[in-house]
Length: 302
Image 1 (cartoon, rainbow, N blue to C red):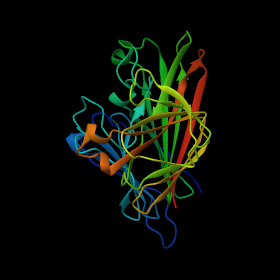
Image 2 (cartoon, one colour):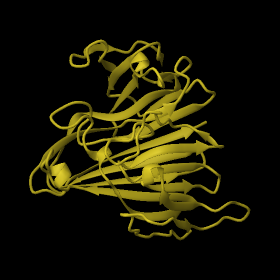
Image 3 (cartoon, one colour):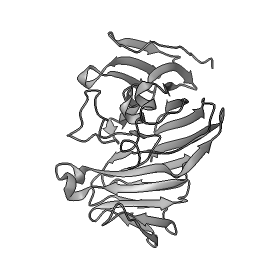
Image 4 (spheres, helix red, strand yellow):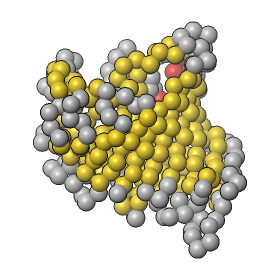
């Protein structure tokens, strides 16, 4: 099947744009729609011919919704703001070029900048969009390097896939850490993650600045209270039971680590309704000029 590819100008976005791509007999259209979201921020809506849907804000390249059979599997916190001034709290925010605290702002600037929509295509009936981010005065004030980031999102019947690529476009080397800070809709008392047994752990409870090293001995990890734990050299597939009747496979390539997080009573209004299972790169990625690094994530609901 031929792919439909285009480049859109999305800043500013003043009118709704609708793109329909190739149709299968007896099936609905796959589509990509550019529109305005909350706070009048530019938003892209992907719809597969199977009826699944994803919503993506250009601010922070943040996926805020992934619906399969009309059920949203991602969670956006009720205190999230959509004003383009601070990161969107929920969905799948980016942590780049720093995961966690450090010399620049918490979790870096990638989630706090406007990305550009550079292409849309249809591959085997699946809508695909690609966003990009480049350095500018805002990023260079914190991290003085030239870079090019690409974020490719593919929506299938029951799978949401992302491909994240960082290229060093500077004349000097740089290093970074990164993560996808995924918020899954869940019942925290019933949620669990399997696949982590045997991993080395860095437990940030009770002191985030001085993690306790250990080893995961449990076959199934639950969320009985405040949870903030890094799993080093995690396997390339984890299984999440969200406690709401859904089993979600979290597969990855090149995301070497995983993080489980739930704020418990420090976020009393919403902690019962989500858990974070994050693919991460805790150790620094070192890139020489013109080198690239790519990591892929596949979320599939059973």
